[in-house]
Length: 292
Image 1 (cartoon, helix red, strand yellow):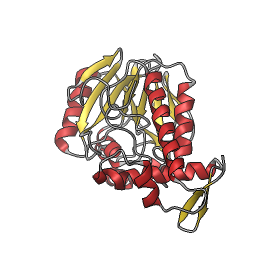
Image 2: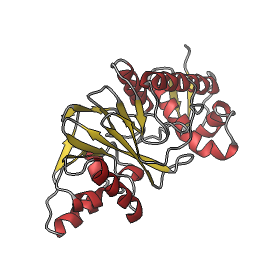
Image 3: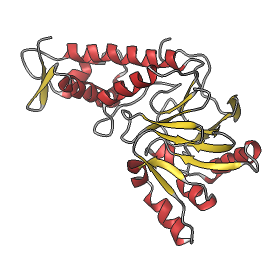
């Protein structure tokens, strides 16, 4: 499988994508080519967990509410899992804590991004429960997996059926930005390889369509990132330091010029990983390659 060549465009309809797994695509202020963040409703053993409430617009939150009433009905709501703190994943947190008594599960870094949601709920006399995740944790019969790399405090969810709701660890549209210091390429590779070693079925990203094989998607990401890392290393010089702009232009000469500012963030993430791996060294405002 190659990145950006999967069949199907960005899903817009609410649908059951696997038994006990409902995808609710909602419009959010996300990065192109995506325009929506997928919220998932997951049966975690008789109760339903909501994964990511990204929008803040009332009309989109109403779509989520309608989907919950349609598919969950009177069943128990286990809570809300926020995969990470980026705004297109946490925009509906205030709506949640003002509307439901079920807890919010998230890393401390994610809770730091939504203080107003809790302050306003408390002002209204509500005491919504926060469950801070610091490592893998069971939520019903599913498991929240600590998968940093794209963002600090990022979690994915492995369901009882071995499907993985990957948040922004993977995408069904475009690729994933790893932007230091929030993003860490070494951690990103480690998280991909950790999931690759698990028995998994489908891969369900926060943006775009899903993959029948999570492993195929993970392999494609590892291959893509490894090839890009090789290009970044080749863009460095053994003789003199090169700055980020020069490295980016050499390593990303296959992308449109208007994407170079974003590409430079991933280039930086790759260079920092090369330094961590002992393949490069920082010199002044640039970096120099070390002998293989």
